[in-house]
Length: 454
Image 1 (cartoon, rainbow, N blue to C red):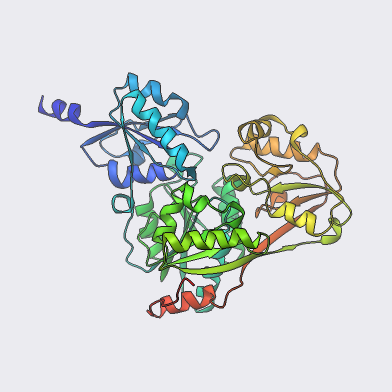
Image 2: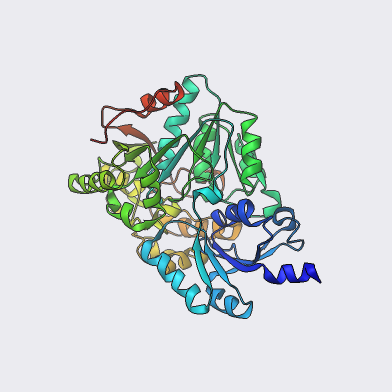
């Protein structure tokens, strides 16, 4: 009887998520916490991740049958029917206004609403941790992470890269993942979004860790490394306490560093802020971002940088009718109208950028309906085999001279492309006097960063 009463007193909770932060918050705060009963996760942003079950192998002894994952559209009915007392928001890259709209949904249905911060969710490593985060999805975190990893490799320091989670498949098989070869990507049936983040590191000879249980992932990575490099996702803050936190801001979306969750949090926590893409943004927008950062965090060092890009064969662009395929998250929930592929098409003189929207097949058509702000480019969406097939059918149905691949993924390895392709690669290039290499070297030597944000 006493056990039943204790269970009834547990706070009935729903965690709103997108298969990442939500699972992490559960693992580190709720899993063994008998004060709460997590009744369900809701799923948003990523197609096809609802109607799964968070398995018993991950949910712990308090949840022997696991925990259902339901569509976010069912939040209100679930709160009312299951007498939910608390709704926890646990995903990223939402405007502050959208956060409060979600809060209003929970409150109107009768529940409390909560955000969780670093003290409740960050884990401590026994190794030094460098974290790379951002103000928005698609700001250019990956180029900064690669530059830092390259510096440590040059110094003979073993680095383990731990990537923000993207567990979109069988969760029982994704508790701890390790990627050092393309065979690892194939064996884990990685989505296009995962490959966008892992392939460039593998090409550099780096090892990437990811998965679902970030305590186990951290302890596994610590056995192989001298330093942990947290490679963030979206604009989320790290899962680990960091000793050096670098945040990337995007002047093409100037002002978003003040108005998006939790990007503003990242800026306030940052040791260094990299204003990226200054070569393609206006000077006015760069100044706006710089001024906003200085107000939010006057102690942060500010670096201005460009994303230098390179194409595999510019002759296949000049004077050609091209289809542009972009990094998926950047132009969907990252809200960029176009990306580096379109920039390359214009720079190298394409005669026409063909609008792929009238040719979209199956789930790709659904992407355009869900994200109407996407420009005349094709998001490299591939969260399932079916969606990869739809992407392949869409690309091959479009009459063009060349397909420009602005995604970091080697798409030709995983889908059949019938037309010539040009890959666009991009790397960070600092425009100010202070270099990321110098910052990392000073950090590793134990020297204090004494630069002024000016």
